[in-house]
Image (cartoon, rainbow, N blue to C red; front, top):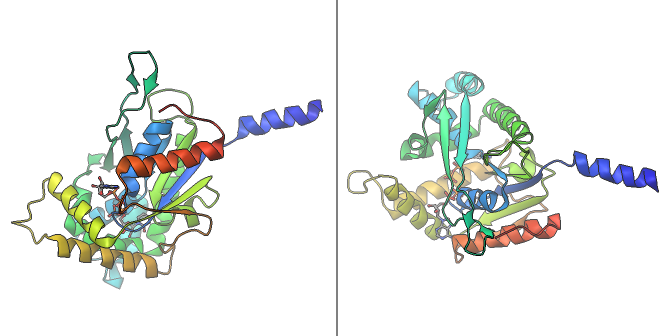
Length: 280
Ligand SMILES: Nc1ncnc2c1ncn2[C@@H]1O[C@H](COP(=O)(O)OP(=O)(O)O)[C@@H](O)[C@H]1O
Ligand SMILES: Nc1ccn([C@@H]2O[C@H](COP(=O)(O)OP(=O)(O)O)[C@@H](O)[C@H]2O)c(=O)n1
């Protein structure tokens, strides 16, 4: 009996942080949802798409066209050499009048660094979006990103980015192959989808919010929708780690949901699986 109890305690002590894997097509709401879920639960957050976007920026800065097979080796080398860092700034909990704490509604922001330079906005521009799927289809580039993401993930296991020294209770990671390749044993896998016109409208609004000028750039709803659909097709049909829903993933269509609504669904599911109700 005592041995059994001790074994149960030591298993609990060794339990790794709760892992949430979020995958889905472009602009389905992955990163917004993932960040908010992480903020609500006090988990860490890793945006894997940012890594592929950084490698694409590094390649474009050296005029390496990813569709030219003679550049594959150079782009792969760049992927291994580039130092990529993420910093997510979570808002502090709100202190209510009755002295209870609730989670702020504001969206956390993620800064992305490529070789120490803040490239957070640069990696979201149209020219990077246009080439990123070709870069992400290169096998060694995926190996390099996987290595970096796993290193960061292992670090997050021993110290969170919510401003305390204690280790974080969990990790939310989003991308295309998180549930299938990166975290195949994730405790919760979510596959987000949304109508492609809705996704295009949301992405266009986001680009304008970030300073894009549709009257100067070739940017309208049809152009954005075509870009998302073209990228999804490339991501779904590539040989290495294609975009697909893991067999054990829960699918969530965000077309008619609010951001709060989709976050609530996932937080509820995490609480159910952890058996630990969290504060709201
Ligand atoms: N349910 C929703 N309602 C309205 N806008 C949303 C919703 N979910 C996400 N968005 C917005 O859609 C855009 C794309 O979302 P994002 O999280 O960047 O998607 P992804 O990471 O899948 O590319 C963002 O501007 C985000 O704020
Ligand atoms: N885990 C991942 C994440 C992104 N990617 C690639 O990186 C691209 C950009 O990802 P992203 O998440 O930043 O893109 P959006 O959905 O935000 O537009 C995707 O279109 C994929 O080609 C991938 O292949 N695997």
